[in-house]
Each structure stands twice: as structure tokens, then as C-alpha cells.
Image 1 (cartoon, protein in one colour):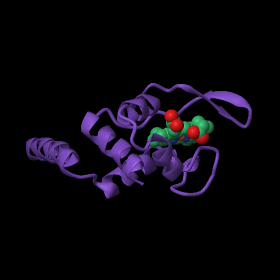
Image 2 (cartoon, protein in one colour; image 1 turned 90 degrees about the horizontal axis):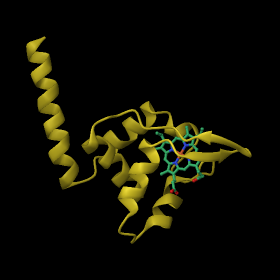
Image 3 (cartoon, protein in one colour; image 1 turned 180 degrees about the horizontal axis):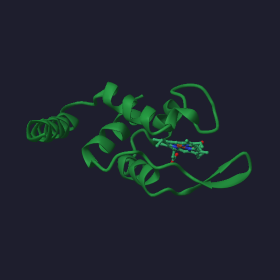
Length: 109
Ligand code: HEC
């Protein structure tokens, strides 16, 4: 168990430093998959939510893009789905580096 715990910590640290170096697309997609995000968003097809490519376009060049998206996927703001107000789903992670990586991946599309 001890070994497993330190391995987990080591991996966490690696992900954290990696997130600053480059976007880890596989990790980002795995996290969004785990969080059911693809239920309503596709990369380039319209579903209940905007395609991620359009989100990236909308925020391109905006200095507060990362901050806005991070808040959107962690604070459960209200959104409208089929004319009904619902809480937007929150991402299933408490790791800021992991969340940042997912946000940067969306913005990189
Ligand atoms: C039940 C459907 C649903 C699920 C599940 C869902 N979303 Fe959304 N999402 C929406 C709707 C509706 C909006 C608001 C209108 C739009 O942008 O299409 C939205 C908006 C967004 C936006 C754009 C915010 C903006 O300011 O333009 C992002 C980014 C986003 N979602 C990411 C995610 C992520 C990441 C997840 C998984 C944690 C997720 N969504 C899960 C429906 C959903």
C-alpha cells in the first residue's frame, strides 16, 4: 500500500509539471470522458452543448479564457438545456493541474 501511495504521488507530480510543459490530450480526453462531458459536447459536432472547437474559437486570444472555462466546469453555473435551466456538470477532479490540462486542451482545439 505504501508503495502504491508514493507511486500515486509521483504520478501526480509528473502530471503537474507536464501540464506546464504541454497539453496532454490523452489525459484531458480521459478526464472529460470520466466526467461524462462527451454526453453533451463533441469536439466538432453540435449536441446539447457547444462543440469544443467552437468554444476554443469563441475564447481565442482572450486573456481570461482559462479562468472563465475553469470556473464554468468547476462552479456548476446554470445553463439552459432544451429550454430548461439546469446546473452545468462539474468536472470529476480536484487536481488543479489536471483541470488546467483539460481546459488548455479544449482551448487548443
Ligand atoms: C447535460 C449536458 C451537459 C454536460 C453533461 C456537460 N455540458 Fe458543458 N455545456 C452544456 C450547455 C447546455 C452549455 C451552455 C451552452 C453551450 O455552450 O452550449 C455548456 C457549456 C460548456 C462550455 C462553454 C462555456 C462558455 O463559457 O462558453 C464548456 C467549456 C463546457 N460546457 C465544458 C463541459 C465539460 C468540461 C463538461 C464535463 C465536466 C461538460 N461541459 C458537461 C451542456 C453540458
